[in-house]
Image (tube, rainbow over all chains, first blue to last red; front, side):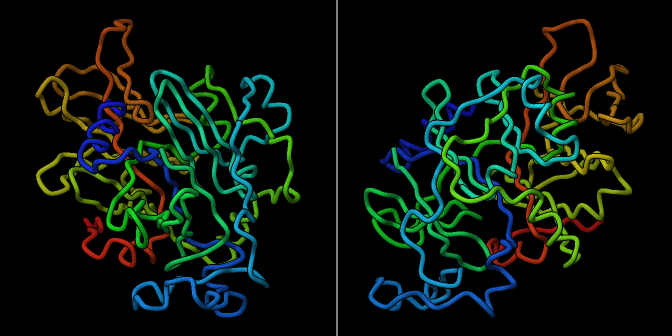
Length: 130
Length: 213
């Protein structure tokens, strides 16, 4: 089902895009409501100033961050439920997904510092974002 | 295939990531490209379930779990967001996406009605909420062109048990599986959802709907 959907999308747009399983969490501790105090306008010459809608793009943090400040998890490794349970707590939040009969869980405590995981299941490219 | 990176840029409290090849900018909340080569394009999404570890491993004991990455960029911030949300009293909803439309189901509203049969446009949806684990999911209630009418049986420690009022079969409301010995029974198709801060819903989906019974 999902595979078909992605293929359809690729045809519709004429490009092959990654399928992103996004999980929106609006309030980032270092941003969101805290933008007033610590977020700053983008550096000049990013090409965003000319578009009024994009003027609202801001960067967060005490100083401009390098491009890869959040290191994307590119080669994720996994454990079994039995192995993971030893180091996880019952109430810990995970993002769970199923692709092609395979189930995966992504503990948000690991995602907090990476924000994104790149993955591929059976030819379906995924970007898990948090 | 695009590869994405993220450096902490934000738009209306959603993070904005870039693709490495073309440096175009994408908004996480919507999956829409707002600047660059793919401006106006939207990434496809798949269903994902926001739940507790105990709940997930009970429903899917065969699941694999992301291992702690070997390269540790910072110390891992355990439960950083939960504390923040509790302090701020942040309200969440389940955003459900079907046929080009989207509707938010505030979790506060679902607390008292663990199953909601609704329509988004002309598309029927079944929204299920499990208060003990604060897990919300949505399904397409159609099976073989028949609209299944579910009624709530009970909320258990790990599931929301439903009954098909037509044939009295029992169903798991969190997995969409019929609880019968007949494995050939089709599962309900999980819909694409995302948990969303209620107050930010209309910022990203100006034509988004909000469930208000």
